[in-house]
Length: 294
Ligand SMILES: [Zn+2]
Image (tube, rainbow, N blue to C red; front, side):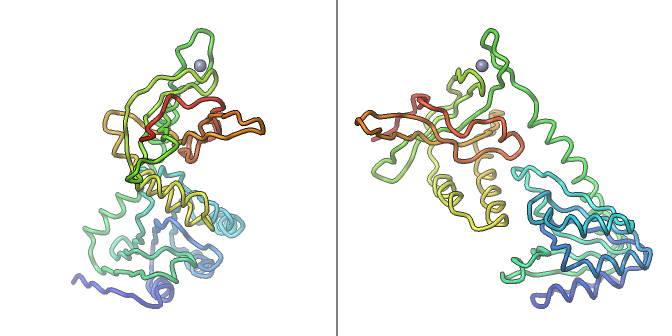
């Protein structure tokens, strides 16, 4: 008979208790895992010869436990750190399948941050059909990574003669906001080498995006950064209907030098994490003619 239980407290203990009941296999997909805190759990499973597969996201916090991860791997664990594009946001799944029949699901990340916030865990027992669906989702996660990375790296070559640069789409916001605190911007396709550009979409306004970009400048840790990065990527989905993938967001910036000359440039505030290193931090003397100052 299928049984469902839900927990709001001592979630780490619940995980330990339920997962240790495994007889044959445990698969886990959770974005943030503190491998130091859960080391004993994983180690116990491996000692009992239980098949252990884990996927989590390829973030700094997870990678700070690489010693534990590698130790567990030598003991037989199959651990994958996925570079998931947050625009599809699949790694916000958090689930465990035990012995292909029990499922743990919920909002709980296996990290210290999670213990402070309001989280929950649902346990579904003896449900083979759902367990199979969840297992399929796990396998899908592994495939999606390969596909989306390919898509993002698809080269869009600059059309200028002799230029070897690559074109990127940057959403450039105007410097000043309107009296209603709304900022407008355009999506520009720009070459990262010769800076030749064309406007693709004009007059975009998104106050929420503007606020998130400001917050991005003062994040405290990796977790906060990833959450903001996810929100920004989700918001950008709105503009991606016409196959316009936004690789970065910038804002026009004017500075005065010592002799009262104005210097315009575009500062890049957010970059897609997969192609970011190819986009400059700043386009000097370039505003892409983005002026919405009234
Ligand atoms: Zn070029």
